[in-house]
Image 1 (cartoon, helix red, strand yellow):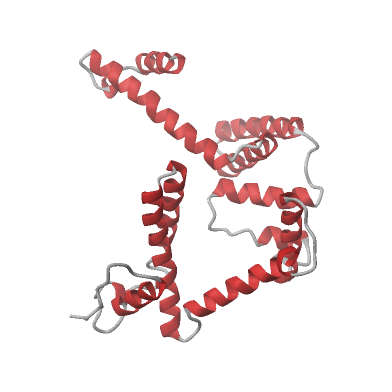
Image 2 (tube, rainbow, N blue to C red; image 1 turned 180 degrees about the horizontal axis):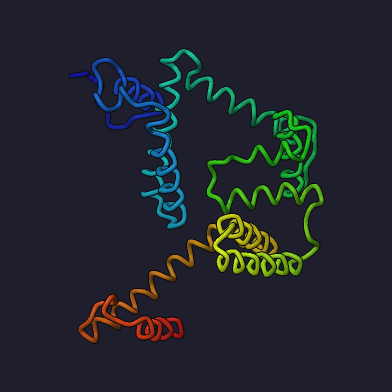
Length: 262
């Protein structure tokens, strides 16, 4: 048994220490065999759970989920410490240096008078920091691990800053209609469906940008709406002493439309 000092309240140093102990020779059999790859999904899942706590504006849940995200960060850093490549202190050092560099209006002599101008300056400094000499470099820098709709949105935003964009939503809507027609023809022919579907989604994200809508928020809301309406279908079937799979498509559609109307 490892003797970890019990306290009424723990701090950041304790968080570092308990991860080190869990991964030590005498620690947890599961923790000490994990790799970056094996816990990669855990990092993503914890980040999404923290985001949900933020959406719920639940401070108790937020505290817990942010702790889970921090645990994942410390775990990855501890793996690297053992490998001799960097430590959690190096992570913090890099973060602070980055913030100092990207906030010359706070820690230097530059002047920014609005949130919008700060973002313009931030992007310029980020390109300088990352050595991004071309617009294509900035497009390539958008993380491929992002959810697809967010990645599309970020790529489009960066291209728009270079002037590659329609002047208003009409062009985006026309493009969405064009791509939808191409998808229909692809489905009918059975060829190129995946590519044309991707084009439709990309065009839909462009419309979302002009409308000021987060595409991930939009699809999440639609998923919730679908669940609510399907519940109405299921309840309607139950009132008839049946389950949804015992209804015809026409019967389910009628119940669906009734839920949509209400």
